[in-house]
Image 1 (spheres, rainbow, N blue to C red):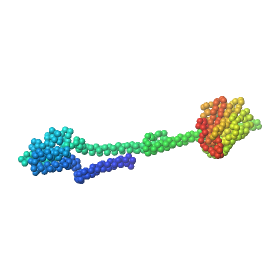
Image 2: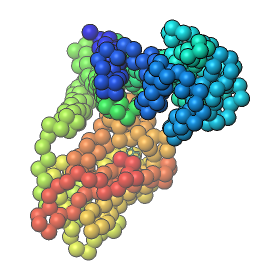
Image 3: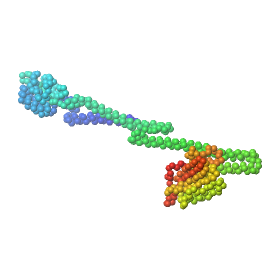
Image 4: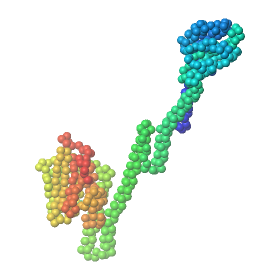
Length: 502
Ligand SMILES: Nc1ncnc2c1ncn2[C@@H]1O[C@H](COP(=O)(O)OP(=O)(O)OP(=O)(O)O)[C@@H](O)[C@H]1O
Ligand SMILES: [Mg+2]
């Protein structure tokens, strides 16, 4: 059974119960008021038509009726009639006596000149003794008794009571008012039903159609999150789920794209040296290398190509392991100045050969300890310095290394006066396989993985890496490392700087 039907049934049930309670209350009230169980049926009639006078008025009326039956001529005795009228006056009623068409007595209570015309005519069998009538805006209830005087003249005695117009209107409109009240209950019920179905069933339907969208693979829709009730919260949770799902699908697509690109880049980069090697081996096989010198040259080329291949495979392997976070970092406390001194010593001979001056820029006076994986940090350093030497195009070549320390971090700068990097390339150089000169067969022969690896390593240390460069002037690479704490230096993941470009 749908919620809509359940709600409809429960509201209709509630409506019937309230109507029943309404009727029951009214009947109990009547029974309590009249003390008669049958009177409920005639409640309206009995109370308002047969019994228009109060008890007090009624008892005076009965006295007058008794008099009319037994001593009718007494009903011409003005003194007696005034006595009765006085008694009636105290309860805001009045007396009227008629003999034939002549007025014998009229109470001054009402001050109503048209009273006589409106009184009902003589009727000896006294069928109709209680009723109401109105004169203009004023309403009256009466009890009447018709009799004959001793001389046979027709006499009528009336006890009249003026009623409030409001009471009279209520009496007349009572059936309509009851219908109206029941109507209000029914309408209120219908409106409540509508309100609940709109606030419960509609959002639920919306939610269901949203799940259908998701089943169909459509994640690009937004749920209406206006309501703040439980269903609103459910919709909000659903909306969050949809967003997460969308993000993860996007991420998966992106990953897929990256994987394809990676495979295509790898095959491209592997093919070049392999084609070369194949070419030279074919040359040897076909007897092109016919002298020992030529043979030597060919073999040397093949050897250097296999070295390139080896380097490439090695870089790829390292990069993918770092990317998959499969290589653990072995952190220790490293004296950064000594570490850089060692690196420079190691490269000294190679740099001298290429005519590059590798020296300190700003060297801290005392050593500073950082938390680092020595081997990986060295790899990052060599990648950066290797670039500086590969992309050098000046006559006076230099590479400067500087260290700056803040209370928590150490920043290392490697500055060169090489060819620089254009502003279009600058944001991309840390991407894998990205090389500023597009041709993949350049003499520098790089695969574009060096800086991607350096970034992985520095970020693995919890630090960051960035670059600033001016085309034709030179380039500076910066990276940060966390300083050792007094307690022995543990590694955490916060970033020291927010505007790093790495
Ligand atoms: N010091 C620098 N001066 C000028 N250009 C640079 C410098 N460092 C990097 N680049 C540019 O950034 C690109 C990416 O460098 P990266 O080290 O990642 O790759 P690569 O040196 O080409 O190849 P690999 O390092 O894998 O052998 C380089 O191809 C080069 O165009
Ligand atoms: Mg490089």
